[in-house]
Length: 64
Image (cartoon, rainbow, N blue to C red):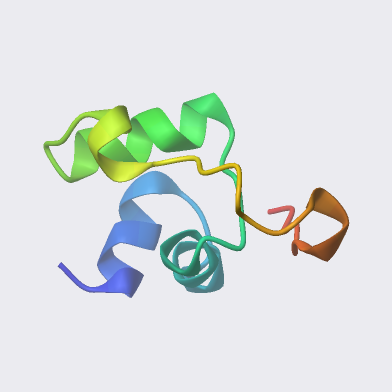
């Protein structure tokens, strides 16, 4: 599945998927659920949160 395919399936822009993959965007619970469902995976298998990640002020937040 391409980034574009996944984006269309979950109702976001492709750029949102890119930022999710790069760890630059923390999804809402709803988006995390939708992505996991589309990929036939569990949320905790797809999204791993690490304390060593950049501080929130260094993140990019996208609003669709």
